[in-house]
Length: 429
Image (tube, rainbow, N blue to C red; front, side, top):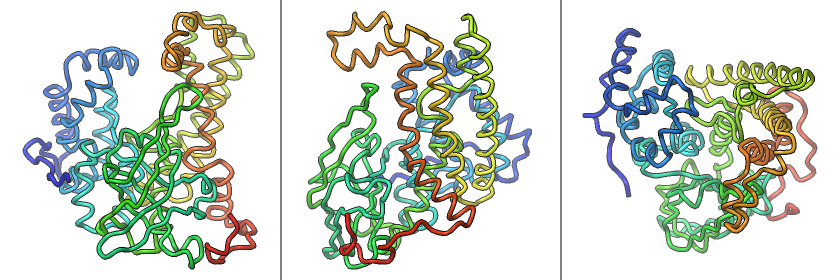
């Protein structure tokens, strides 16, 4: 168990009283002293130049330096690994750090688990789980979906029975992103089968190193392993790892799902920009030397306009979060728009490749290397296009999010459900 508190000796000496000029000076000095020189030298060339001199493993090894400074979650309280700064001060800091592409690791912890703990957890839980999550010492994944409970998540069937100061969990989860490289998972399980399906669910924090857990990797059509299915066979979870009251897990999960939609929509601060590929500007830069037909130029410019609209919409959500609110149903707006928009952008980039999108030269060379070699040989645009196909499914399907928008944002009548309010055990599945 990681119960280490944040190292205050490495934290930046910033407070809510620090002026903007002091913020800029102290952050710039910190960058000079702590960000490796090759990374700083590559910054003017943009993200691709930085990635060329900064392998992923090197960044993960260095990342505790960023976490210890408090800059990774500057608005969070000191005890949780932050600096207790105002949202406005955090924006000043982000402006100074942005050129160095210091992305936050552990996004499913930051965006999915943390909102639930802030809204529904106890102080003891926040002190136990947030600092090691911020430092990336304990990596998190999400175990919500099941083979029979995807879009209709409230129909989930994983069972959790109380046994003294522990809960015993049994069942199967699927499409759990990065479970194979995580230490903990947020998990929904059914604790009362005689209650309506949304009332008998409880929210747990599960240690994936516990006896009785089996993680099986799932390879998607791009050749990569991003998802897993997870089997739990009488896994014991301490009651201390229960977030919120027993049977109130659906309400607790609302904080997680809103954060997930915000992250997948690209509206999170320091989190995921888009899942699969680059934006329109990057695409236009990559094909700058090619002769692009006028119709293709027009299409790219239309996509660019949509991308700007998406960014402005996300700014509304970001402003709410930075003002102390939660993403809420409005995050679904960005999620719905971003899913189809990113698919269109990546397909447009692939079309610009022409025949090279289907007959790329490396495919014959790596054929004997198996699927891993094939995945490595895919052109960037093709791999991005393939990965983007999941954008309208992950983080809540487009159809479900449109229902959220209609009912909770526009105030339209609920979708008809003849079994609304019926006990879970009496509901067809």
